[in-house]
Image 1 (cartoon, helix red, strand yellow):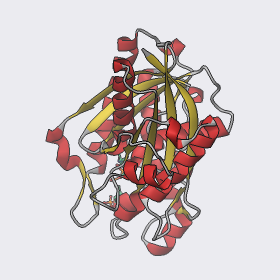
Image 2 (tube, rainbow, N blue to C red):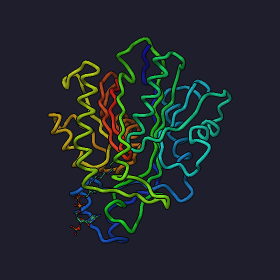
Image 3 (cartoon, rainbow, N blue to C red):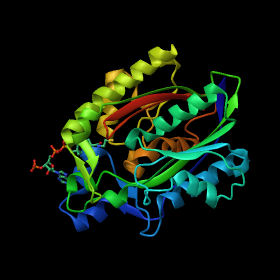
Image 4 (cartoon, rainbow, N blue to C red):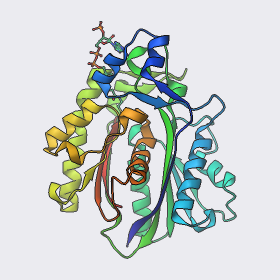
Amino acid sequence: MGNKLIGYGSYLPERIMTNADFERVMDTTDEWIVSRTGIHQRHFAAADETVADMATNAARAALENAHIGIDDIDMIIVATTTPELDFPSVAVQVMGRLGATQNIPAFDVRGACTGFIYALHCARGFFTAGIHERIMIIGAEKMSRFVDMDDRSTAVLFGDGAGALIFERSTSSYSGIIDTVVMSDGKKFDMLHGSPDHKIIMNGPETYKMAVSLMPDAARYIMDHAGITQDDIDWIIPHQANIRIIQSCAARLGFPLDKILITVDKHANTSGASGALALAYAFDNGIIKHGQLILYPAFGSGLTWGATLIRV
Ligand SMILES: CC(C)(COP(=O)(O)OP(=O)(O)OC[C@H]1O[C@@H](n2cnc3c(N)ncnc32)[C@H](O)[C@@H]1OP(=O)(O)O)[C@@H](O)C(=O)NCCC(=O)NCCS
């Protein structure tokens, strides 16, 4: 029992925060940020704009793209680590705002920057079990809520936004979410985590080292697991944390850079929203075409890491 992608959507807050904007409020430069991260700008949500607002906007766009209504969906999974409310989930808020009349399951997963893959992993399981018809996966984050303007080494790295994908059950096992692998190592909690007062605590160089080792490992593992080679892959859309991490992963895997999609320059690191946002960007700009095979590896706080293969 397989699945196929039938719609996508995204939402980015109106406010763009450029590197020049950071230069005005902290001891940093555009040159430092671009050379270390590849980031030129990021979107920051308005003070009263919530993760549920952004998730709902992306979900609405995905429903329109798929030409279906919310009652055609029978499960909503939201990947987010930055919800304003401890309960209920962002997923039920989205469902309510979109006016769902069916009492479908809706829940959040917290996988930090790997959250998108954790959500896809759940969806793949439900499709394989044959118990759901159409599942909406949303990645939505308000990272700016955690940005500490007194810490220049993390403040410049993150952005806000949301992306949504809709998958439908199908008989083909060669379309949609083809495979997922997710892993975690709780012993590495200290490397990157949030604090109770909503700050990002990160050992940058250690995080960098783990990312450039674990993302290629996950990519190799999933290709072996799915029985495919690099030649079968049309695009790598990696988690968008840092261009140097992405380039290093590509080099370790031996992938040419022209097969790698980059959005970190425009969106910065949007954590669990990164994958769905990048896919939506690639569709909107005619970069990826229906039928192509995408490899998406990711890495994040936890530590968590993994990869997914999606035929779009
Ligand atoms: C954060 C990161 C860009 C820092 O780059 P780096 O080359 O490792 O830089 P370092 O941490 O060694 O710091 C080098 C210097 O730059 C300074 N610096 C840090 N942030 C700065 C900024 N925004 N502007 C200017 N200087 C800055 C540091 O204070 C340090 O100065 P010092 O040598 O005088 O102490 C890099 O470690 C990284 O990308 N890590 C992974 C982060 C990530 O992607 N996390 C999310 C994973 S999902």
